[in-house]
Each structure stands twice: as structure tokens, then as C-alpha cells.
Length: 320
Image (tube, rainbow, N blue to C red; front, side, top):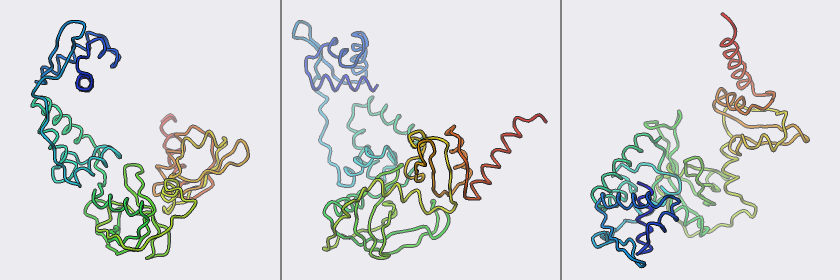
């Protein structure tokens, strides 16, 4: 179906294009190109053809789509979905779901039905992520671009992991929004909080309201928003990590992005990793997955988790 849609795009952009040209553009045989045209016709897309040296395929009358009118949240939602990957697309109460519903409804019946089936199937297999409000996200991005201070209401988990149904604690904050960064499926606001007089990284999906003020700010001259967010995500967890690898930095670095810890070269053939983690067992498994030689210096929870994993592996291979 994807190549059939590419075929339709080629015919729309180059009326009179022949099967040989379509085949060349798609990297397929002439026979396959004609098969894609046949699929479009089966889907009730009016593809006309003519013979001769100037013949080829054209889109006939009847495919013109009616104009689509998107609200601002719907349009922003579609852009956000393209940036971070699909989510919440089948929920008609969301801006993204509403916009996609409009698109599917104006497609030819067979094409629209197929698209709807694929959409619903992919939604069942997807992991639901926290989705920020498109209007709130756009307001924060504009404020960051224009160096304008904002006041927000921010909801933080009062306890637990912050999952669905967890109690929250709302707080009003005055911020200089430095940048909005998308990392690992979540939207983060890197900012300076005047409320606590410190740099902060906040989850955009937890921003309930935002108001732009008339005050302005200056960005730090050496600011790297992506690196700052990655560094923040690697810090502040409960358990310490201190590991030395018997390998140069160039071999260790591909296994540990900045959000997982800080790497320091120790000469030409050793590298130190310092970090924090909320799950020592997971971190121990990740260390073992590298296949590199290493020694654990701390913290005690990580050492205990690695020792327990080692005992289980030995028990699995030792004779009863």
C-alpha cells in the first residue's frame, strides 16, 4: 500500500508519467509499477491512461479532496506527532485524533477504511506516553524563542512514580523558558526557575496553565539545551553508580548516552562511568550487555544487584 500511495503521488506531480518512469523512481520492475496502478484503481482512485509517445497515467476527475479546516490545536498536534512519533491517534477527544479523523473521512472509501484499520491496529500495539497539550507546548516554545518570562501552574507527583491516578501537588512557578527539548518520547522544558532560584528541567505534559509576562531574559551564552537535559536526566536518582571499564572512551561511549551517566577517560585504555540510577538490577544488566571488562566501585546497591545476577547465572549452569 505504501508504494501504491507513492505511485499516486508521482502521477499527481507528473501527469502523463509512464510505467517505466514510475518503476525507475520506485526502484521496481515495470510490471510492479503497473500493479500499483491497478491497486489504486481497485481502491476507486480514478487513474486514467493513454497510449502513444506522449501517453501515460493521469489522475482523473473525482479525486479532488474537499478543503480541510484544522483548529490550531489540531494542526499543532499533527506537527508534534511527526516530531516524536505517533500517539493518541485513535482518541477522538485529542487534537491529533480529531485531525487524523478528518483526513481519513475525506479519503476514498476503500483507502480510508484500510487506513483506519492500520491506525487502530498500531494503536493497540503502542505504548502510551504522556502527551503534552499542543497549545501549552506552542506557547512555551514561542516564549523561549522571544526570551519572555512565564508563570505556570505545574503538577508534580506527591508520591510514588507519578503514574495514572497518582496524587499530585500543584505549584505556581515563575520561569525563564530556555528551550523545549524532546528526548526519549517525552517533552521537557529547560528553564531557570525564579521560584527556587535554580536551573530546572520540567515535564511539559505536567504544565497545567502558562501565562507569558512582559519581562524578558537573556540566555546563558554557553547553553547547550540537549546536553543540559541529558545531564539532568542522569542525575538525582537514589542509587550511586561508579564503574571503571578496561576499555578506551571510544569503545564505551556508544553504550552510554549522556542521560545514563558521565564518562571520563582514564588514560588511553580505561574509562570511568559515574551516574545515579533508580533501578540497580537494570543498570547491572546494562553493564553486562556491553561485553566490556569492568569493575564496580559503587554504590553498594549496584554491587549487590550485580552479585545477585551473577549467582543466578552460575546456578543456571552448575550441575544440580
